Image (tube, rainbow, N blue to C red; front, side, top):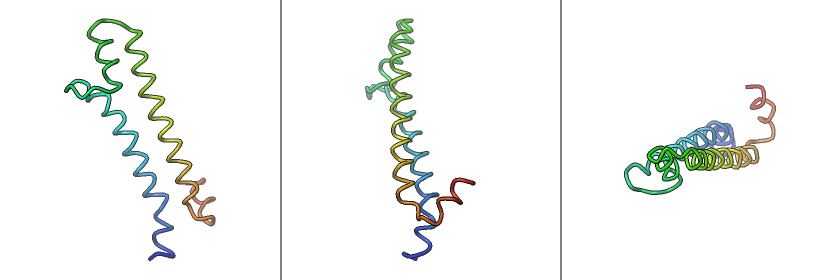
Length: 92
């Protein structure tokens, strides 16, 4: 299990983790509507005050955070993927 199956499952597990993290960052923006604060506050205020600058600042900040988190986790995924599976992961 430790030598074969877990190393083979690492790319799939990490892809699931990446998806979950990016999805949670997007949901975090919605949390401002229930009073949780965060970057969604800019988006919420921009919509309610008809201020496109605040809306764009919030949207760009949330987008950059999601992209940076995805690339960081992709780097971790590539480092954890066994050497023999690198070609198979690129073609799939």
